[in-house]
Length: 97
Image 1 (cartoon, rainbow, N blue to C red):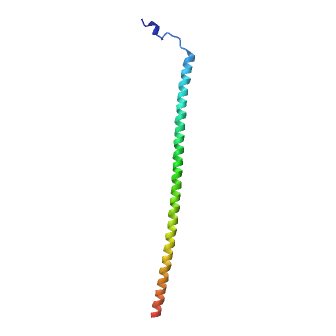
Image 2: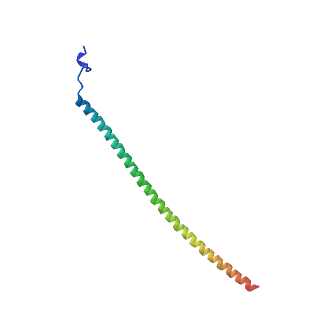
């Protein structure tokens, strides 16, 4: 009844097998290339983001350094004024004695 649907006795087409194998291999190679490119793109974006973070960190460091220099300058000025005041007080104390 289903004798015409049986393909077990049918000859194997070598060209069809090779075409299927090459097609399957091509699909896998294409998938590998796509995944590879996506990974490379992702890595490039991560490196660019890291570079941007480094730039922001460098700018922040430069600002903190400027603030530190300004604080140091103020401290030196205040210390100089304190030394002058102490020196004038010592001079006044010596004159009193």
